[in-house]
Amino acid sequence: MLSEQGKRNIEQAFQRAARGTVVRTSADVCDIALATDPQPDPRHGQLVLITVSSFAFRLITIFQVRDTPEIRSYYLADTDQRGIDESFHEVANLCCGALNREFSRSFAHLAMSTPYTLDARCISYLAQLQPQLLSHYLITINGSVQLRATLCMCCTAPVDIQLNAAEVEQTGELELF
Amino acid sequence: MAQILVVDDSGTVRDEVAGFLKSNGLDVVTAVDGNDGLAKLKADPRIRLVVTDVNMPNMDGLTMAEKVRSELGNSKVNLIMLTTESSANMRERGKAAGVKGWIVKPFKGTAVLDTFRKLVS
Image (tube, rainbow over all chains, first blue to last red; front, side):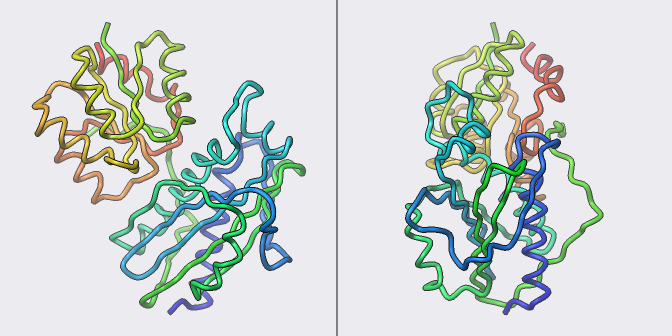
């Protein structure tokens, strides 16, 4: 239901979306690599999830965010008392929003969930969903801030995702009707 | 003084948008979802501009926009969507509900400040 080219397109779309959204400023260096270990460490941290769904598929994008000093100082102000998972919800929302817009070129009817948090141990059960795509990534920002991300996609019909690499997306501008 | 209502389930976005607008001299109140937004709008006639997310729990921003017109009968308040969504279907639904404009997140305050000032004046 999901071709190898389709998988590559989805992975490429995710990496492009993540590079533009998980960093605080465009000057920050974001390196995204396939994780060599098959699963994130389920003993630590929490998972921030967002689901993009259509009639043909359900894609769960999962970020594993640990409350380390490096991550806290990168994403939160010194005086911010919120948990890192709560503040990371909007980062995940921006990333999956960009992915959702990319997918909307290929699918007319898409819906995106609001972000939600699960215990990191839940990551061990993704295989039970029998996904057609299960990819793990290690995201490193400025050489020191590290997050993990997972794409888990289940299809109920043939899925073909087209990418438009040439198009540069405009965000933040007010379009008046 | 006219007020701006910022509706978003993300505290990060509420703080960012409201903080920017307040630091530029605008009067801002916030709400956490569409239900809360409608209640604030009912309670405060000074609100002239609503800046709202789409995807929120309890009541989404487009449903809230429709209810502003149909249930509150408020045709004067300006509605702006601030969202990661940009599908044609949603924009058309927004237009039909009387939404005035659409911003794809992230929020860039300097790009919209002048227009926001005009919409509340």
